[in-house]
Every structure is written in C-alpha cells, then in structure tokens.
Length: 270
Length: 324
Ligand SMILES: Cc1cc2nc3c(=O)[nH]c(=O)nc-3n(C[C@H](O)[C@H](O)[C@H](O)COP(=O)(O)OP(=O)(O)OC[C@H]3O[C@@H](n4cnc5c(N)ncnc54)[C@H](O)[C@@H]3O)c2cc1C
Image (cartoon, rainbow over all chains, first blue to last red):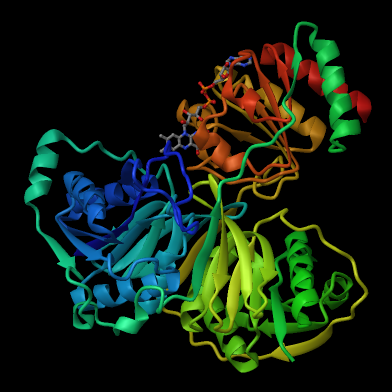
C-alpha cells in the first residue's frame, strides 16, 4: 500500500503579513515558514497507517525552492520519500491549475492507494485543491475526517467526516482522497534522529530548470497563471478600527447595565 | 441572455436563509451585467419553493432532481450540476459557503474548467464583465481582491452573513432538468448522525458567546451558556479551552477552528491572540470581558468590561433578560 500526502509550506501563524511592492502578494523576507498546521495531522495519520500496515508514505508539495523544508519536516515525522514540484518558473497557480498539476504527477507515479491532505491551507485559506485532485483522478473523496480506517483486504477506506450538524460515516473504494480534520490525532514532533534521517531520504525534484511538460504529464500552457482561472489583483491589510469602549467593572451591575444599553441603543445589535 | 445561478440550500422543507443571502449577492451582480438571476436546486426533491425563491429575487428556478441525489455524494452532485452547466452555460454560479458546497463545487470547477473562489465576503463585476471577489487570505490577516479570467462559468461561494437578504417581487419560472447519473460504486454512506444542538451552529449564528482559558474548567462554561441563551446566541471557545478538554473541538473559533462572522461576538476570558482573532475578527461588533486591563483583546474590541467574568457574566445575563 502506498499513501501520498499533499503538503504545503505556509507562513508561521504568528507571521506579520504585509503586502509586497506590486500589491498582489506578500512580503516574504522576514517570514518564518512552517509546514501548514493542518497538514501535520495528515502526515501523522499517514505515518500511523504506515506503522500498522507497513505502507509507504510519499510526501508531495508544489512550491518554491524553500518549500522543500515542508517535505523534510514530513519526512522527519516518518514519511519515506518526497516529490517537490518546484514552481519557481510557473508560480501563482490557482486551485484549478494545481489540481491538474498534482493530479497528473500522481497519475504518473502510478500506484497510489490513498491520498491524504490537511483540511485547509492557512495561507490561501483554501480547502479545494485536494478535491480538485480527486476530480482530476476521477476517484472518490471524503473531507474533514475525524477517523480513517483502511481495509487493505477489500481495498476500501472507512471515513468518519464532520458534516453540518453532525457526522457521517462513508466507505470509499481505494484509491481515494481524504482530507483530515484537526484533532484526528496528536501529531508527533520530529525527533533529532528523525530530522537527521530525513536529510538522507530521497526527494524527487520536478521542474528544476523550468518545466519539461513530460515531467508533469501536462502541457506547459496548463501551468502557472496561463493555466489558471483566477488571479489575485490586490492584497490589503485591514486596519482594525474598533470603538474600544471598555467599562470599568468595579460595580458589575452598573457596568453590565451600561453595556446592555450600549448594545441595544448604540450598536443596535440586541 | 446571460445567467447568474444561485445554488439552493434546503433544510428539510424550508429554504435556508443563506440561499436568500446569496440571491442578494447575485442581484448586486445583476445590476452590473443585467443577467437573469436563477435559483438552482440539486437533490432528490425540491418541494414547492419557487414562490419563496421568487420573493428573494430568483427569476428562474432550475430543478435538477434525481433519486440518486437523495444522500449527498460529492461526485454525483458534481456530475449533475456540471451536466446542466454545460447545457445552459451560465456566466456565474454562486452558492453559500456551506460544507456541502465546499465539498462538491471544486469538482464542478475541475469538470467545467472553471475558476473557483470559496468564502467571498463581497462580489462585484469588473468592467469587462468578469467576476471579482473579495476574500480573506493569510488567516484573516489580509483581504485579497481576486478576479476571474474571462472563462465561463465563474464559480464562487459567499460567506454566511456577508449579504443581507433583499425581498423583491420576481416570480420564478420553473425549469425541470433531468440528468442521467451512473450509480457510484466508489462511495457509500454508511451512517449519518445528526447530533441535536441546543444552540445555533457557530458558522450560521447571528450572535456568539465564547469562553477561553479564563473559564478555568468545563463546568464554569455554564455562565457562558446562560449568557448565550439569554441572547439566542451560539457558544464557542478558544483553543486554550478546547485543548484543556473543557469543551469539544467543534466549539473552537480561530485560525485552526471555525471562522465566524456574527453580528455580535462576546469573548469571555479570552486574551485575543492573533490565531483566535483570525477566526472572529470580521464580526460586526466585538465585546470583551476580561479581568486584565492590558489584555490584547481590549485593543481590538468595540465594547468591553474589565472585571472578573464570574461576576460580570451573571450580571450581564440579568441585564440582557431585563431588556427583554
Ligand atoms: C498553529 C496554531 C494555531 C492556533 N489556532 C488557534 C485557534 O484556532 N483558536 C484559538 O483560540 N487559538 C489558537 N491558537 C492558540 C493561541 O495562540 C492562544 O494560545 C489561544 O487563543 C489562547 O486562548 P485564550 O485567550 O483562551 O487563553 P489566554 O491567552 O491564556 O487568555 C486567557 C485570558 O483570560 C483572562 N482571564 C482569566 N481569568 C479571568 C477571569 N476570572 N475573569 C476575566 N478574565 C479572566 C486573562 O486575563 C487572559 O486574558 C493557535 C496557536 C497555534 C500555534
């Protein structure tokens, strides 16, 4: 059995986000990059399945040179090998183009049984890429998994998913795409020996000197912004402008009465 | 004649409010491009809802009904909607940013080679009649303006509560579309458990009261629930409260929890971390209850009481009840 985890490198959750000089991206100079926090759960889930079944775990990312660190972190957690699609020469892909790129690369890898991913990328606030990959591969998907049980015998996976108002148990034929909910497991920290070992694990690089369409399996014009359907025109950093009326709570009854009145008469919200 | 489609969201027999919100977003676009606003239902049986849809601006109502669409299945829903999209070529397809739409519209986008933006907080048309949306990026820290290439359809979901329903007086002409669906051997629903909720779902709630580490334990959340109930609000929590095991993860608001934008958000015993704010910063009015005058939340709220939450909450609940 072979599991592929789609991961993403994102700015640290504490990172200060500022628009860059062209106004449609962010300044990246002072940013600390991390493995997308939601992807940690996906990597952990893959490694737990590996521990039970002896599965092989491949970690794939699309991103600039530096994003190899997201792969290395995942390998240090227990992944076996990486695939780094270096998009330096065809960056800024939307989810449509990414679905195609990742989908075709997975097709060419061949024998993947289960594709795991975090539920959302915290930078793009995007949840759709794994689903678009599933569509490209014409395989089923279940999102927001709180439990994943693989049955190698029947080649199925049973997934408990969060749905509006409750949960649903679904059985998917493999190969399938599953995105995992936060809290499905307790992601391990990469140990020092793990980190050392990760450095030696194989990582295939795709698109090193610009892109050779054979490497990815789709034409060059399906890549980058040419292959995309949407583009970011502008990034604005909203300034927080709130009225900051803080009441002293020494006399709680009076302060509470005052607050209730403000909410009714000034904010007109209750 | 170009069309803007709005996906209908139904709970049992009634149309959910989010549908009317999205119809109102579609009406805004219609002012720019004069397109026909159409409601679109995908499922096994829509019932007689065309009058309600018309009242909120739908001029046409496509019903895509098929018994195979009884249970939600992302592939089949995508197949059904994509087939009808290919037949009628709408310019724009909008839906509420519900879990179901988030689950199957990406497949529709890939099938129809469409652009897709989820969770728009505003929609507009550029001069060249392509869709333009605003949405958060980088965990609520920035607002991006995103424009679609001139390729149809352009698909987007709209954040709940981002638009107010507007009543009109259209009457929706009903068009029934039948679709052939293969049976899906790859995806089976084994069990659906709807867990009855005492309070409104966070992502839909008009008001939310959330507790943080200041609650000190799970039992103490009672004061949060009491205030929530006096307001008819949903109840949420910070990650600190969830990680401490006091309340379940589904209550977590923030960067790695739910993103909410109610009209009123009351943060109780919550310091106001970047990650928490990422999940509630777009709320219309933010109220903070905290005993630390230097808590960061007091720098990003509209109203606050600096005091011990165990004194303030019962008093505030009282005062809210008095107002009736
Ligand atoms: C990758 C990552 C993702 C994260 N995602 C999230 C997320 O989704 N959501 C989230 O909330 N956090 C998230 N966090 C955690 C975040 O950084 C904070 O640790 C967390 O929000 C703090 O929760 P809190 O405000 O309840 O606790 P604290 O920061 O400890 O604040 C408690 C507050 O309660 C006040 N208080 C204490 N007792 C009382 C009392 N009796 N009366 C009144 N006030 C009192 C204190 O003055 C203090 O301000 C994330 C962190 C990381 C690293």
